[in-house]
Length: 71
Image (tube, rainbow, N blue to C red):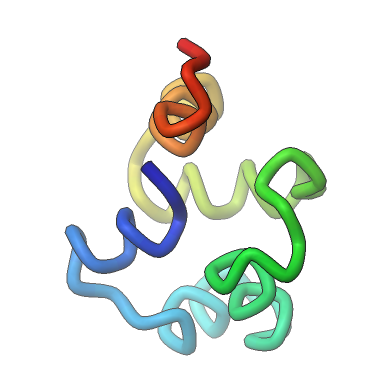
Protein backbone atom coordinates (compact mmCIF):
# COMPACT_ATOMS: atom_id res chain seq x y z
CA UNK A 1 0.00 0.00 0.00
CA UNK A 2 0.99 3.60 0.00
CA UNK A 3 0.09 6.95 1.43
CA UNK A 4 -1.72 7.67 -1.83
CA UNK A 5 -3.84 4.54 -1.39
CA UNK A 6 -4.55 5.41 2.24
CA UNK A 7 -5.72 8.88 1.25
CA UNK A 8 -7.97 7.40 -1.44
CA UNK A 9 -9.44 4.79 0.91
CA UNK A 10 -10.21 7.39 3.55
CA UNK A 11 -11.42 9.95 0.99
CA UNK A 12 -8.94 12.58 2.20
CA UNK A 13 -7.05 14.95 -0.07
CA UNK A 14 -3.36 15.65 0.35
CA UNK A 15 -4.30 19.28 0.92
CA UNK A 16 -6.70 18.41 3.74
CA UNK A 17 -4.14 16.14 5.39
CA UNK A 18 -1.40 18.76 5.10
CA UNK A 19 -3.59 21.43 6.68
CA UNK A 20 -4.76 19.13 9.47
CA UNK A 21 -1.26 18.07 10.52
CA UNK A 22 0.41 21.42 9.84
CA UNK A 23 2.86 20.13 7.20
CA UNK A 24 3.49 21.87 3.87
CA UNK A 25 1.21 20.56 1.15
CA UNK A 26 4.24 20.09 -1.10
CA UNK A 27 5.73 17.67 1.43
CA UNK A 28 2.62 15.49 1.38
CA UNK A 29 2.50 15.74 -2.41
CA UNK A 30 6.14 14.59 -2.62
CA UNK A 31 5.38 11.51 -0.49
CA UNK A 32 2.22 10.70 -2.47
CA UNK A 33 3.95 11.05 -5.84
CA UNK A 34 7.00 9.09 -4.75
CA UNK A 35 9.35 12.04 -5.20
CA UNK A 36 10.33 11.39 -1.58
CA UNK A 37 10.32 7.69 -0.76
CA UNK A 38 8.27 6.35 2.10
CA UNK A 39 11.47 5.00 3.66
CA UNK A 40 12.78 8.58 3.86
CA UNK A 41 9.73 9.92 5.69
CA UNK A 42 10.64 11.80 8.85
CA UNK A 43 9.37 10.12 11.99
CA UNK A 44 7.59 13.28 13.14
CA UNK A 45 5.59 13.50 9.93
CA UNK A 46 4.83 9.77 10.00
CA UNK A 47 3.55 10.13 13.58
CA UNK A 48 1.31 13.05 12.62
CA UNK A 49 -0.14 11.12 9.68
CA UNK A 50 -0.67 7.99 11.78
CA UNK A 51 -2.42 10.04 14.47
CA UNK A 52 -4.61 11.75 11.87
CA UNK A 53 -5.79 8.37 10.59
CA UNK A 54 -6.12 7.01 14.14
CA UNK A 55 -3.44 4.38 13.55
CA UNK A 56 -0.46 3.39 15.61
CA UNK A 57 2.85 4.39 14.08
CA UNK A 58 3.68 0.69 13.75
CA UNK A 59 0.45 -0.05 11.86
CA UNK A 60 0.99 2.97 9.62
CA UNK A 61 4.44 1.72 8.64
CA UNK A 62 3.13 -1.81 8.09
CA UNK A 63 0.28 -0.48 5.96
CA UNK A 64 2.56 1.64 3.79
CA UNK A 65 5.22 -1.08 3.51
CA UNK A 66 2.95 -3.88 2.27
CA UNK A 67 3.92 -3.35 -1.39
CA UNK A 68 7.56 -3.87 -0.54
CA UNK A 69 7.10 -7.33 0.91
CA UNK A 70 7.74 -6.18 4.46
CA UNK A 71 5.47 -6.77 7.41
